[in-house]
Length: 90
Image 1: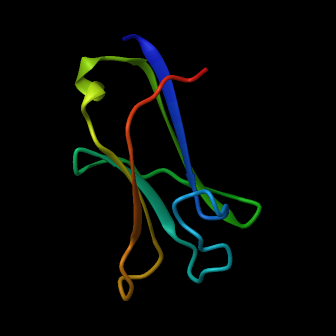
Image 2 (image 1 turned 135 degrees about the vertical axis):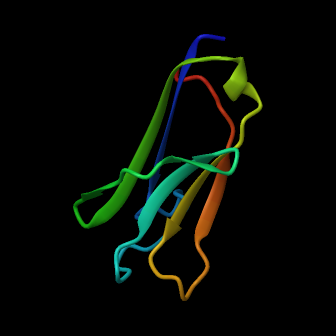
C-alpha cells in the first residue's frame, strides 16, 4: 500500500461525471466516502466547478472503500453521481 491517489471531479468535461457547463445555479460538487460526506470544498475555475480529492499514503482502510462524486445544482433535479475506486498515481 502506501500509494498516493488523486481524483478530479468537475462540471465541464465530457469525460467528467457532471456536464453542467452553463448550469444555473452552478452545481455543488462534493465527495463522499462509504456514503459519508468526505469533502465539500469546491472552487470555480473559468466558470466551471471543480473538487479535487487527494489521498496520500493510501492504506488498507481505503482499499475497499467506495468514493462518490456528486454534482447537484438544485433540489428539483436528481444529482449526478459517479463512483471511483482507489488507483495509484503514476
